[in-house]
Length: 158
Image (cartoon, rainbow, N blue to C red; front, side):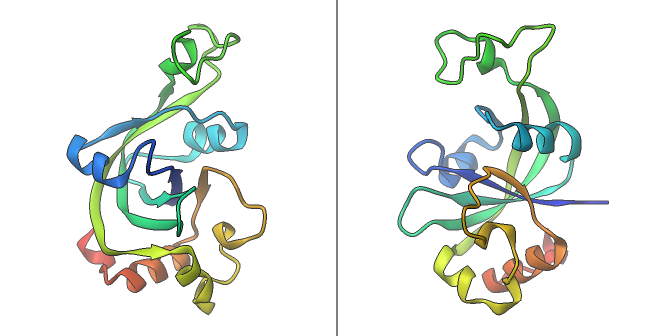
């Protein structure tokens, strides 16, 4: 069974366009335990990901990606030169996890946070809740379907 997720990236750090150019990428640098647990325990090969640009105006969903490699140790945690270095991470206890994703389909027009908030069918979606800052979060299927419809994407084509 396929699950649905939303993953946030700042466009100046890693934009959707770069994912398309790269063809796939590892999703590193997640340093929140709840987000790590989702990546480690719940995200599976073939799950769909809403690629969300945060910390920009306006924040928006740029497209849909797919998990192409399940959770494995985040090597940036053990690299002292990395911005994501964690001195407590070791090969025996890596602490942090990453997954790989690949692009599936770009949205012809990004779906902005204000547009998402105006859609009554998305009421209750975790992304739209006040104080929701988690960089990796589950998306119930009904919200994923509605977002696809808003973007003019047919789920059957994914």
